Length: 284
Image 1 (tube, rainbow, N blue to C red):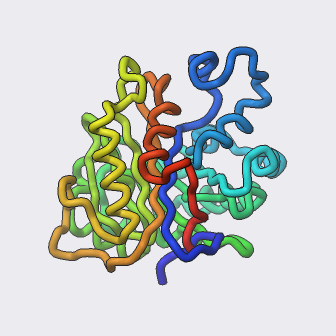
Image 2: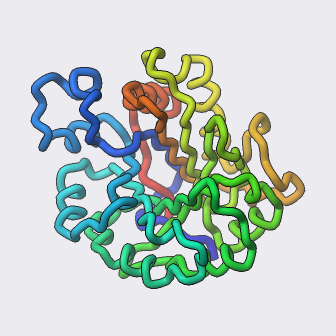
């Protein structure tokens, strides 16, 4: 059975966001001058629909930390959490069970309905091994407590561009990250009940990181994803096996090298996909 989100809704949502909320160059550009650092998350979460948390990749957070994030953000906000590097940066992924459980049990349930996808990012040198990767996906729990979990994997080696990988992810109902990146593989095959995209070609010399035409094109692709279809102008690895056509939540993150303009990109994108910035709750 496909994994489901922890919150119920009758329609798909499209959410645009950024990576993290602590970045000094955002002060005076995204954050108002003089805004206390302690107010950055409340400010960011009231202007964006989602944030991808990178801190969980580098260190274990405390339950109280997750609880404070939930308290400081609005009701309809969603955090995606990047799984620990110690889990994914290992030779044998089938041995990651204890590491996965430590992360799952670290207090993420304190986020409640604000808990979004869990992102598992792999090194660019990590090659596809069907048996080992399948064993890793088997270790990902479908739920914790009363919360259903959504998992997304981000392979960054071209060996993953194979129908066997697509079939494996679809069988496990795990999303494959679509990366708009200069060197990482772009895999647009839909394998879960949601779509996770990381747009990483932004340019800080452009006020919205992506030019308006490019933003509009990505907004249209997101709408196609949300409707249950697959955009026709981006590459799929296994075109013969199409996913079921049903509404899907879409998470789009603007993450690039300079990232100064990422918040502006996310806000401009959100206006294109949901006028007035209104975002529905994730689907059940």
